[in-house]
Image (cartoon, rainbow, N blue to C red):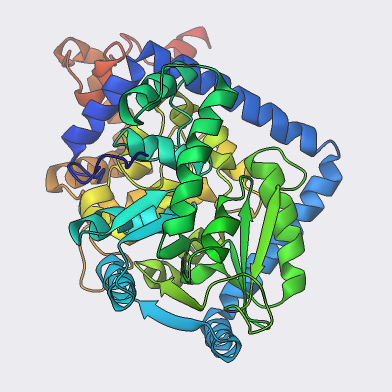
Length: 482
């Protein structure tokens, strides 16, 4: 039997500009990582494309999915109250958490009331977001990941590098060495089926003895009080039925009004995420075990987490961030993510979606450089199944980070990247290009004094040759010809 070593020593969190640049530099220079991610992303892109051979059908489904998400968000406060009322009627205990600390406090309180010593977890990015494992381990409670990818990264003391495929950065040889080192009685084997059976054997025993099961939620249906859970391995179903207590945690944006709204979102989620027409399991949970039922938990708890989501909701443009259904398609198609992987970002949610979600959860003080880790090529927006305008939101966040701080900011930490000299430089640039006379004078001076151009030009010359004005202006050359 194996218990993963604690990964509390160094939780990944965005620290500083220097740390971000260091991680990116290391990732770009890791040839093995770049090759692995390139192959994996090409595979996922091909699988997604094969699921949508009809462009018109894809466009219609995206339109419908976008409409459902926007409709749900337009009624979010009302739907959350309806969800709570119907879940409570069904016997589910609903808790509200404003931030990560409050969510962990609530769940720790539930665990202590049941004298829990172990918690077995299904896949949940929100639990990663609040550092749930670290909070439980600090309280002396084992929190074991049961999703195979999550189990692998937990054994390795790492964080997920992708929201759908947590261990996508690991090769089968690395996983084989990890299992041989960390799982007692296991010899080295790089046979994938054998590795899966090893993990299954360890986890099955944990399911039987766990005091609490924890899961995420893909969709919460307000009209019926139903929690929907999408998965492929069956571990989610085990977590939500075998232990006597089931805790589910989700962001407040995951609610939809009607059960019929789930079908199109589910259809486009699985095809966008892993290229599957449908996932292996689709769980619908509406309450604890009834007296005439043979399985299921005796208690079900739902924790509804804000953690910056209300901030995004308050702004009409930024609210579109909350349309996300966590499929990961934007990562799979992002040329930057493909080259640096998920860990380089240093946040729970990497890639394009992480760059627009993390500033709300962590504030722009810590994340103001994240929106700049993008080429703005637009691939993420083109493939998003719910049409989140990610490039537009990245530009908005860049502006919020660099603009002069003011008293009533739309985002916490607004102006974190503001620099008076840089602001003066851009105002000067705007003044030059807004006036034809200023522009002609500037270009005349630049061509005459080009020898004074500095050879080091901040980040530009880190990977490029210095910019240098031409010896003759185009307007002068045209005048001479005519």
